[in-house]
Amino acid sequence: MLTSQRKALILDRLRRDGQVIAKALADDLDLSEDTIRRDLREMAAAKLLKRVHGGALPLAPELPDFTARQALSSDAKRRLGAYAANMIKPGQTVFLDGGTTNAEIARQLPKDLAATVVTHSPTISGELEHHPLAEVILIGGKLYKHSMVATGAAAMAAIASIRADIFFLGVTAIHPARGFSTGDFEEAAIKRHIAQCSAETYVLATPEKLDAVSPCQILPMGSVSGLIVPSDVSEESLAPYRDGEVPLFLA
Image 1: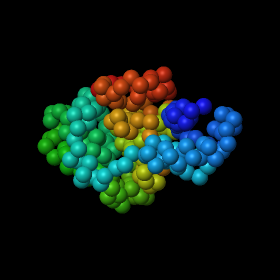
Image 2: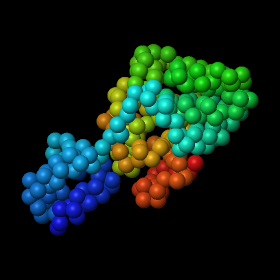
Image 3: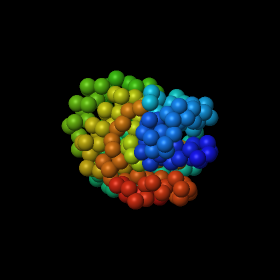
């Protein structure tokens, strides 16, 4: 097998399984483990994957700080925000997670919508200043500045007293085998807790988050009610999710 063929196979395994074990792949291909490890080193140097002890993982998306991400308000985020905002009905209780994509949901909400919006993000609560009919509940706690959301025991206790009709979960990475993940352990725990306290959970995903894995899993793929992606995402990128455990919605 040519080197290029092996590397293509490694990328296919990463997309399918969310990891590559060097010894197992070497056994499958009847090659030396050193050959596979050399391939993985070269692919890591080319930023195609992340080397770990014994194998490799998909790359986790690189995230700038929150202020920098706010400046990157893409058309895709606006379309995702508008789609999600249209899902919210008068009288519902909706929980908005932190993040710049979910901030677009708040911006797109009709000014005359009478609903209860719960959030543990002070930046998202600020977006609702000029929504006179929206009741806003801001969850407090220890501020995780990278995402500008409250975490910790106080936030967990407050969230436990609320039952949202719909939760829009923010994630940094999505993988068909590894589910939804983010970069911080405490933030992942808060997100998982909100989902457990909500009737439905939806994830808005910009294209760079697909087929990626961050260090801390939030939920497995089958634990959410739907995945919302831009309609112009390539069919190749969507293929692993079309017949999966989660309904797919195009915005």
